[in-house]
Amino acid sequence: MQTLAHFADGGPGPWVLLFPLVWALVIGAGVALLRRTVWRWRVGPGRPRTVDGSSPIAVLGHRFASGEIDEDEYWRRLSVLDDQFGRVGRGGPA
Image 1 (cartoon, rainbow, N blue to C red):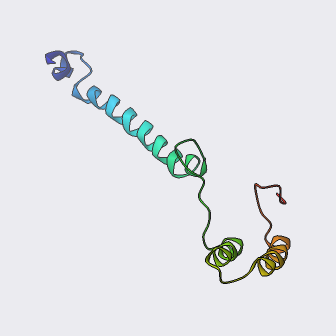
Image 2 (cartoon, rainbow, N blue to C red):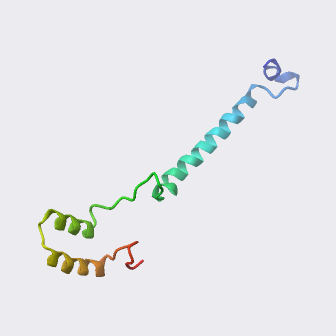
Image 3 (tube, rainbow, N blue to C red):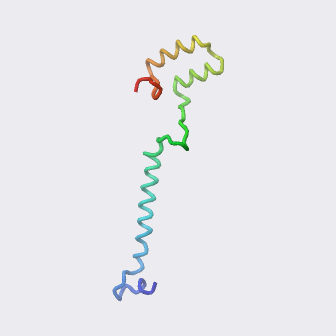
């Protein structure tokens, strides 16, 4: 530690100890940026697939499940909504 403190004698000085801290901050910022953007929407074994509860198809499913509409009404409305919004990921249009 004495060698770092005596930078007038040709040593690097105490500021050299900041390089690992700067690299740790750069790597941490990169990981945080990736987690907030790219990795956020990835579905993995620990992250269950979530369904948007405000989509029209989801609202229709909730109404059918709660008994507000019957099966005929459900299928009729689903065919109309399928044409407009489509179902992604279950054989519907991409």
